[in-house]
Amino acid sequence: MEINRVIVGYLETNCYVLVKDNECLVIDPGDEIDKIKKVIGDKKVVGVIITHHHFDHVGALKYFDENLILNKSNLKEQDYQIGSFNFTVIYTPGHKEDLISIYFKEDKAMFVGDFIFKNSIGRTDLPGGNDKEMLESIEKIKKYPDLTIYPGHGDKTTLQSEIKNNPYFKM
Image (cartoon, rainbow, N blue to C red):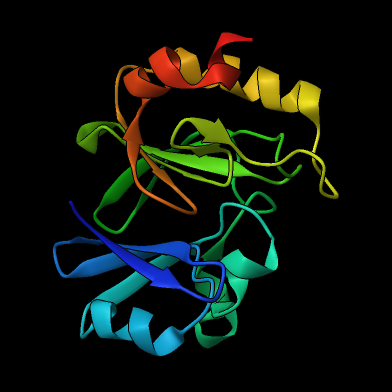
């Protein structure tokens, strides 16, 4: 699977365009649809996944077919196959009550929205945030094998690095 990061909007949100077999999944199209479409090119969009509904993650959503939009309201915590993509949805509230993480076991990749950042976590003081749920979500994620974490902002990291260096993983 090819993973393309497109940094969009004034909050520099990471939108990801995943490509496999001339199909793509778009994760968190926050803004600047022209930048996102340039990466999509002529590939078939088979799904648009929203990790959580904060404005900086959904700003370009209106440009996609509403039948392709996937989020916590229509995804259960289970395995899915959409087109060429196989992934697992994991409920990871804390930053926001509707936050989901998307795990691609085959590629050892997890897309976490604003749940985890490199050596930090998403804020819990915004509407829908919850400290207790954040700690429970961190404990849940620790049980996965080492993988690359793709956050909603900033650089990617690894689960092993976060377990070792992230102060919130030690609480």
